[in-house]
Amino acid sequence: MELYFAPLACSLATRIALYEAGAEAEFTRVDTKTKRVADGSDFLAVNAMGQVPVLRTDDGALLTENPAVLQYVADRYPQSGLAPQGGFERYGLQQWLNFITSELHKVVFIPLLDAKAPEGAKAFAREKAGPRLAYLNDYLDGKDYLLDGFTVADAYLVTVLNWAKPSGIELAEFPAIDAYVRRQHQRPSVAKAFAEELDLYKAEQARRAPPILSRRPA
Amino acid sequence: MELYFAPLACSLATRIALYEAGAEAEFTRVDTKTKRVADGSDFLAVNAMGQVPVLRTDDGALLTENPAVLQYVADRYPQSGLAPQGGFERYGLQQWLNFITSELHKVVFIPLLDAKAPEGAKAFAREKAGPRLAYLNDYLDGKDYLLDGFTVADAYLVTVLNWAKPSGIELAEFPAIDAYVRRQHQRPSVAKAFAEELDLYKAEQARRAPPILSRRPA
Image (cartoon, rainbow over all chains, first blue to last red):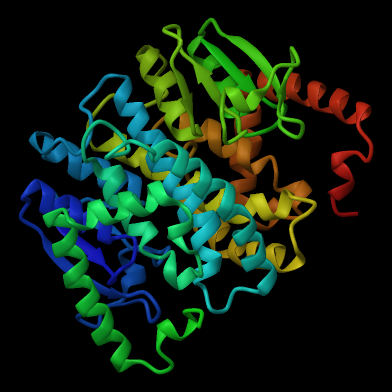
């Protein structure tokens, strides 16, 4: 398998899943601003939406959209336990994947992370953030994971919540979420994936001006 | 099964799926503004997010989030062909469900349909709409459905695209999408579901002031 990724973008969730599964995979870096692959080729020829993740399977098929890619990896390595293999719990997984992709990733974080988003878009996202994080906090209270054990939904959630600080969202206001994030970061696959991509991200920033993190609130 | 729905909301996709499957189902109306179920009970006790659809299974379990609910219905009635039952095509279905839920439903339509959304949020959504609809238009060119036959992804897509006009988006600018929508509306399950919910929606509007459609551009 080959994963097209950008450092600390939502493709990090798939990296975590691949590490959890012990999968052999090639990681191909994409600059999502210039839409160039690391070898200089045109990323839009791989995904016309210009987004990561894209997964190229061993058969050469291309798959996009995080919840689809994550479920593919989980099912390709069923012994990993990264997704319930059937039963009602599988729909529970899909429910959480969709909450993360729609309510958190797209509604809250996309406008807050985009330096060019109008203030009205950011205000709208901030207004949505509170009830969504409160809902998640209530759910996570007393739980170690979204489902019974670590799944691709946790990989996606911890990836998305990493954007809270640069979005001006203080997770300490949501103690169950805050504790959940700290626990997940102690997990070897999560720690390794974040450490590697943070290094890549910092190197990328050093090459760019103005740095992306200039949008981090003071 | 019991479907909690609001007229012309995204729960309409599940109604279409239930009609396609010939499923026995109870349809329970929700006022998503007052968060009351038709019998006056508190909808937030059913779904703390206050959103439709919610599906109550025959076992009494509750499921939320459209792509999860739609896949549950499709798998409960596999003979309906509403979802590929395995193989890589299943991930293709999930890819399209996620594109619709994240890029169209949440990024484009939520800000444009919300009368209280700041102008900056609407401008941000309008800026995102063009590339996403162009991508979809390119994909649909020469195709009858998103996959090989009618699936729950088509049920969801036709439901979401119904919001284009009140969002100020002119689908005629995207000929393949426009033709796709017209074709889908000729499908008996789609026509029946839309006709029924349009009647309910109009009756709801007549009871309310100011009417929701006042946000429809002149």
